[in-house]
Length: 345
Image: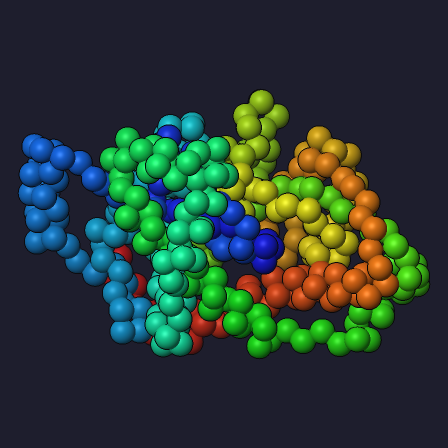
């Protein structure tokens, strides 16, 4: 799990969901219909029926998550799993896992509203263009692709906006909770050989799949899911496709698990040790860290020439990145415990 994220779009389904929806940020991971003529009338009638029968799945502070929203999200996950031959937990367990993620999202969005955070059109358009480019498309071609699957670009925009807001909240918390001292930088440089003036560092271009442990996913279940993802890679499936289906790292999943160029100290020790043991092109067995199980692929390596001062700044950022990842997980547990949540499944 890293803080260098890409944006996930949770409601993309079938072909559109398999598109690599992301660009670097940390965060992060939906869309719905735009259908014309008779299909519109049928959909409107079905929507009216559902609203009449709808109920609350969870109360989250002063907000609610409707049962229809949960059903839509679960249905999308099931469609994706069926299309790619993936295995899902029993329906009840799946609903609990998905609802828990929706609850956490709602808490963070409420915090964004309370802080008066916003996303302007320029920022949103830039992110959408980056998403389209990461799929090798123009923005118009990307809009055509999602609409071909019965969705609209307007709703994709809304989902991206929500993800950016959550990322802003998370980044604020990281800045408040993580302070890096000069002594920590010195200590890291000493551990790297004590050569503060060294001019080269080695970076790894890597991607990963993260299977988290959650309140409804045990250690054994997480390891089994990670083993299943790796087996599909060994059978020749594309890493990006498996990452989009299996990875719980919302920041990289929809970008095919891409982490970009990773510097020493930027990831947690267990991840870095496993990554460093791989040659370019190799894929690791599931690696356990405090975040869950990772499957790592190293795509390339390079040496970067850096000056002494820029080296210190890079080390400072790497330490911040790692600590921020750890603090984010702890902070999310805290806000979940502090929130009023009434689950009504």
